[in-house]
Image: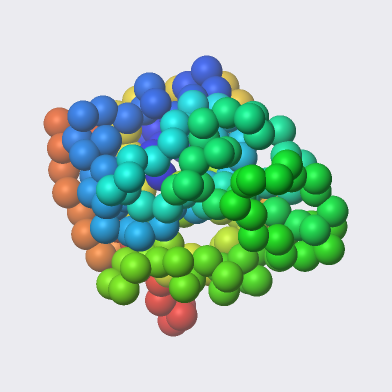
Length: 193
């Protein structure tokens, strides 16, 4: 995730302007080592995700309402899995994991996705805030890789996590790297206050 120093996660609705060359290199490295990227459909739409490369990690897109281009190359990619519930109508030919009768059960989704992660890999969640909130509320966040951009954005941009109820997830700083205009941090879960 990337955020400005005043906590904004977007500039004019996109996270891209907060990023930079070094941040994109960190993101690319995380994706390459992950094995599976988990992302919400809203983030896919806002950030303009494209089909993963053949040598890249699988992309799992979580959606409760659809709103994806079912005929486009992203949804039809063999490297993409749609994670949704049983009530959503998804066209034939799209790889789908259905968890929950009429809402996405993220715990069941994580359990279904885990076997798709190559040995030594991990599930790398890229948001958005609603997905992050649900993952945090259900205890599925083990670490947070957060880039702080040297920008003040203001406005009413969202936070890294929203929805999902109140969460008291304790993290400790594991890594801190200083770039020209960014701080690169990794926070790891600890269950001690």
